[in-house]
Length: 329
Image 1: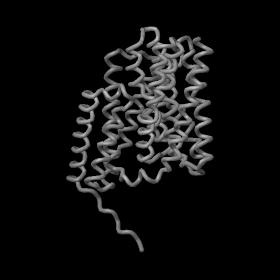
Image 2 (image 1 turned 60 degrees about the vertical axis):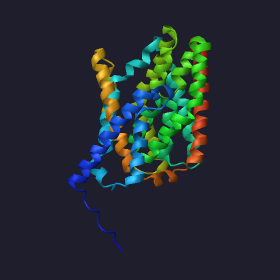
Image 3 (image 1 turned 90 degrees about the horizontal axis):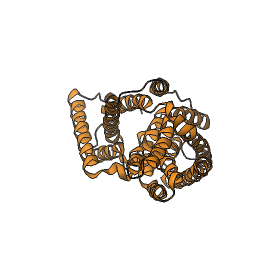
């Protein structure tokens, strides 16, 4: 028996849900600005997604509306901006030591995490999303890699929750180390704390020289996001046997990271781009939450993934510690 064709969404439906999404995005900003959740590892996109998910659970909007209000378009725009404002030039910080720490950490931790996830039979798209998030740069890496691997939005929300909740104890340890173990501890902050806003918050509380080390290591990891996304998309396609077409946005993100390495944006322009990227990503995640039925979150093998994510964070911490001890003392 053939399925009845889906009704096309009306203009009023599209307008209604777009207005709801914009209002929720503004509410998200108010929550973040009032409660300063970024300092606790809870980022703008995650809060937006959860508010959107609440709408999905209560109002049950027709999913075909979101084929018109395509959240990936906004995600793509945010990723292209990210490539420009966090370019490959960041790998040269601290005389190249920041790049060395970031590269070795990412190669080792991604290899271990993906090997374990594959052996345990976790969906490859889900695996690359949360493994990259726990290894590289929290939500930005998870979203970029998920986009490259054609992940479901449900994969993204679970990766974001892992980063915010399971990554918290490791962030607390790194913050303690930064205040007691000098340059070694500061490098742990940059390499182990998943969210860039949280790293910046911790760095502000440190002496200037240590704050510089923490942010240098973190920005070096951020710079590698487009490369990680491309590599892991290829890995996911090889493991799953499915052809994954790399989105144009990821290629453009890579190109912008090259261009950004040769130009220095004025501070005001960089700040404006950071703000624009945050708003684009928040609106995209609100729309994504509204388009994701809560039932989808039950299909991901979450319990096994939690164990893998914790292993990823442990390996991440060990590798960064060894590299920091070798290079920074």
